Length: 289
Image 1 (cartoon, rainbow, N blue to C red):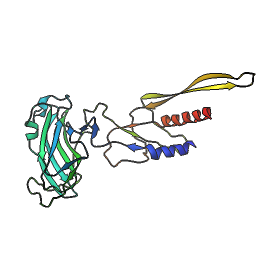
Image 2: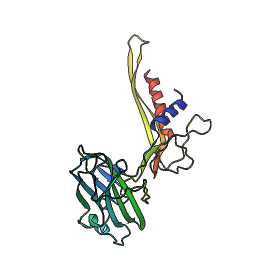
Image 3: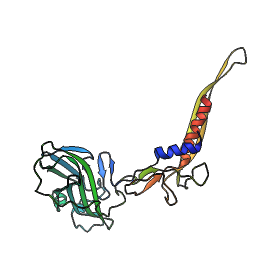
Image 4: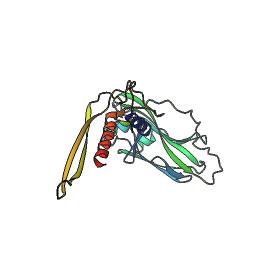
């Protein structure tokens, strides 16, 4: 298999951008604002007439003072408002779940809870439980919109919802969020790309700041049958290659494919690492066969 063909296969198989509007880590949905949604998790099903339990971490997992949850606190980082709506463009419905300051001011501590009674009139379908957050982060004004996809089950909906309904807003709605949550540990979204330069068969990559090392260790035996008695000898060989890895300037790169999601920050895995794996596989094939 030629390196050019291998590069093409890897390009179509592994190139992807994972930059998304929110990140799910250990069951928590990190928004591109200050709030972290504990529940519900994306794709959770609910039945009309039952309750939707909602839990929101408002202290950035302990990184914000509790006074930051008071609207108008005048801190460098804090909330101005946090509201929730159940929205579906498919069934043309927009239902208020929580509006006004009550969600932020109704409890103390770092977590806000809401056990919202889902109206029995809500038709079956997929909805966005949408969180609207107005806040400040290090004196930067934010307006983050975070949709959590949920499924509503309703086998007998015939009535039309009238209480708490609002006009359906056009999509997508304007917002001014952070590139990603300030409370994520690494605050990056991984991606992988491969590029070719001119007619060169070897891919090119920009310099990066850190490196990783790939070590291939081969253990085998050799048998000498030239003498009267066969002599078997065990051996170990090691082959090492170093590839750079880290964040870098993306200018000049032409991704093989692109995501329709908003791209924030990305980590690029250099092609030298992929090529190193291919070379190691070829060496192993030679040694074994």
